[in-house]
Every structure is written in structure tokens, then in C-alpha cells.
Image (tube, rainbow, N blue to C red):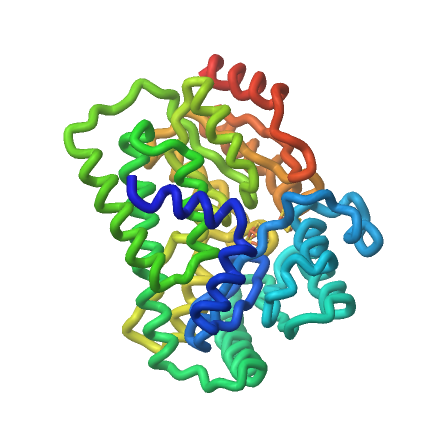
Length: 373
Ligand code: SF4
Ligand code: SF4
């Protein structure tokens, strides 16, 4: 299929891609750390949003600032900054989510000499009466702060244009997920992983075109396809930084039909209403999107969401990938397990960490879980 190689190449070396983009387009590159970042505001400023996911290199420099019991994503992002490997960044944006991300923001501000630093202090509780107004105020402040740093005016028209682009991107990724949900054999899971991840790295205008083409090609392939005999699995957790996991599950006879990662379905879920004030629309999507456990809203919402997805996507079980030392998701897991047990949905948990290769032990556990289904 067209474009798959390009997504893969970009994902294998995001910094190389970003440096090239900076050189050829002249765009400022703005790093960010979490899917609660309003990318549209960065795009409307004429800049390029680039999500950082951690590092593939050894973590050593970050150890003098963070305890080893901090998750490898946060330690990895700091390592990239301290090593200078991301010194092309013109600025870095930190939405306030989990404690580790908040501390990363402080350490970055005090220790990284390149680029500007901005915090986005999002509401912690997302479903209170005041959360909506607060969210809009936060977004307005971010628009002003970013405009000042980049010396540009961020107009409503530019915001609407950015919203149209991100809506198109989200619709195309959803279309790809929907087809794969019916026929997971048509596209290996690691290609899907690369597509979503590339969507947070690549130039969004070009990406919107590419993704529409990828979705159309997959749709063509699906014409006449027959459902495959695979054990339908849903993945859940925070982020997924382990593409190997997809192949391991598929080799064991599983088909990954959906996920609930912030580097997956949570990234594209929910479109922004275009017929209203753009910041209000962006804020509403962030408030209404299925909640990440680093935020608070509707105590039972996440369990209902996962159970609903399992039923809707006809999954036979859930594999929960838990990042080592990720407190928000570790605290969330027992209650999710209780609710999934009550609903009779088989669930397995696998602890993952960027510094550990996803090895044989994990493969055996996936095989045993799939065997049991
Ligand atoms: S899991 Fe939640 S806090 Fe962590 S990066 Fe994703 S959205 Fe942000
Ligand atoms: S939500 Fe978890 S995995 Fe994500 S940055 Fe925070 S502690 Fe790390």
C-alpha cells in the first residue's frame, strides 16, 4: 500500500523528519508531550506540532534529575532534551496532566537552554460547572502566550482552518480503524501503530491528503474480503511505545481490532464542532473526550467506555499495557479489572517499559491469554 513506508520511515526517526521539515518549510517546530495538547492552536500559529514519545537511546543524563521510579516516557523525553538531540525545537509545550509530566515541565524549564517553554494548565476536573469556562480561558491564554513567543497573531480564521485539517485527519484514521475492525488481516497492527504515530509527527496538511488516500486504498482492499479467523483483541492503557507487541499478538493468532491508547484511538476520537467559536470547540472536545486517568471526570466513565468498545467492536478480550511506574494508569487498573470481570470480559495486564525489549516472556503470556479465550 502507498504511504506505509513513509509513515514507517518518519516514525523510525522523528527528529530527522522534523529537522528536514524545518529546513524546507521554514516552520517553527513546537514539541509537546501529551494528547491533551491543542495542536490546532500551534498549527494556527503557522508552526508545526511534534509529539515527543520518549527515547530509543539509553537513559543516563535524565537520571540526575528524575528518580528511576519515574516512567520511561518522561525520563526519555528529558534525556532527548538534555542530550541536545531535539535542539532543533523552537519551543516546548507542557499540558498539565500527570504529576510526572508536570515535574518534567519544571525540570525542562530550568535545564534546557534551547527553545521557549510554555505550560498549559488545564483543569484537573473536567466535568464541573466551571471546567468549561476555565478551559476556554486556558486556551485563550495559550493562544496569547504562543502568539507572543512566535510573534504572530493567531486568528479565528487560522484556527478554523487548523480544525478542518485535524478533523479530516481524525476522520481518516477512524475510517482506517473501522475497516481494520472488520478485517484486521488487511493491515498488520504495526502499520496501524505507525499511521497514528506519524499523525503526531508529520506535516498535517500533507498528512491529511496521505491519510485520505490510505483509507481509500484500504477500503478498496476490503471489498470482497472475508472476516478472518482471528481472536479479536482490544488493547488498552496509556500510551503504546511498543510496536513489537502487535506482531507478538498477531503471531499468536490474535487480531487487534481496536485500542484505547492516547497514541491510538483516544487521539482521533471526537471531532471539533466547526460552526462555533474555535477555542470553545477545541475546549469542548478536550473536555468530552474519553478521560485519561491523569484527569478526573465521571468516575465510571472509562470502564463504561472500554466495556462499550469491547461490545461494539466485538472483541473477545482486552490486553492492558501498563507502563512501569505509571501511577495514573496503575491506580485505574484495579477498578477497571473489577468492572471488566463483572461484565465477563477476559483481561490480561502486561507491564511494559521502554528500556526493556518486549521479549519472550511477554510473547508466552500473550499466547497463554489467547489460548484461554
Ligand atoms: S496517558 Fe494521559 S497523561 Fe499520559 S500522555 Fe496520554 S493523555 Fe497524557
Ligand atoms: S500518564 Fe503514565 S506513562 Fe504517561 S507520562 Fe504520566 S506517568 Fe508516564
